[in-house]
Image (cartoon, rainbow, N blue to C red; front, side, top):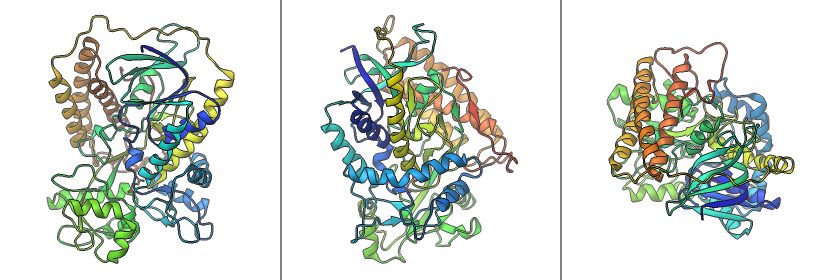
Length: 533
Ligand code: SIN
């Protein structure tokens, strides 16, 4: 099959992709979900904490959730957008529960509410400590049972197809995408609307909590097609990833600190009281930076997260998955503290979008981590990511349906993917070399603490790597590895350029050369075409 037609192409199978697909199908639309791995592999799937939502109107309020989100975001959030997401939280929780997501509840049926960094109230709706897995498993069963939805696993989108690219009409709009199948064939998918739900780009960094699929594909494709990116320098480093010789990328949820876990240096001393009044429950930017500082000061490789003062039965009951995985790694968290380090976790910036998922390019929509709506500002509040993904999916489905009512494109076949003049690569080492270089460079020069000189160095290196990739890309048959590398490199450059543009320290962007905050908070925006893509 080299050509396929559908109403909506959804790229990505995390919470926003699957949830939107269901809601689109409910509206009678035919949907293809293209996902480059198995349906389960996504950042949403590995989310542990939960969904921040006001469910206890006695102890909590929308105003409090809004204030905590704004405080964490360090002045860069858009207050009206924060309001929109906070107020829509309860409805999506009820909807997800109705779709079969089994959140942890008390005997009376009320939700068990967890707490995480930066929250002044208990408001994290969760499913034990495997919230993402539970959500994806429920949505997956629904999606697989719906005949209007086709799931294309092991299919990776190559690029969006725009009318401008092929001079198809005056108005530039998205009319589909090229998608690389698992058999190595590039399929021309003709779609009236495309939803990017590809998640973030943690793999840009050497150390990350993200699964291997997080290579910023949707952000890169959207930018290449003409959508500006915003605040790409705002990369969140999660403070507590397991430090272990053999276990990679294992998140130790912030919910542990929400239940009383305390950060300590290797010699057993607490340190967070020197950095923030909320101590171990400070917002993530402050906590990750504090840990980074302590590690550098002491020359240690990790700090400790101590849970040993808590009731051992409570630990096993509340965190069954983390407890088991730590035990498998040789750490009994009931009796000994867990060694942890910060690692890249979440991109607060992304493709410029309305909270309802509309981009400036007609026919192109975005939801979840790939989008920048203004909810997170300079630092995302814990568990606001699944909230954003779910609320955006709901509204994006509505937007797409109403857009399609007015804007079906005239149907004429789109050009097939051309492989003229390309051959199979015999130099896979080029991909591996560049992949490793980007990730090391970003970790060392564009990490938790930045400087003008480091950023300039990073820009030089990434630009050179991108030139090499471009030559390679046009000469050889595309493979998933090559596509990921191309996307990763573009996203890396967008992060570096945005970091250079921000000449202040705010939220997640801390630079030793500009330690103060500018009086006015401004978004960094890179319009399409500024970075050659
Ligand atoms: C966590 O459980 O700590 C991660 C949740 C999040 O990233 O908000």
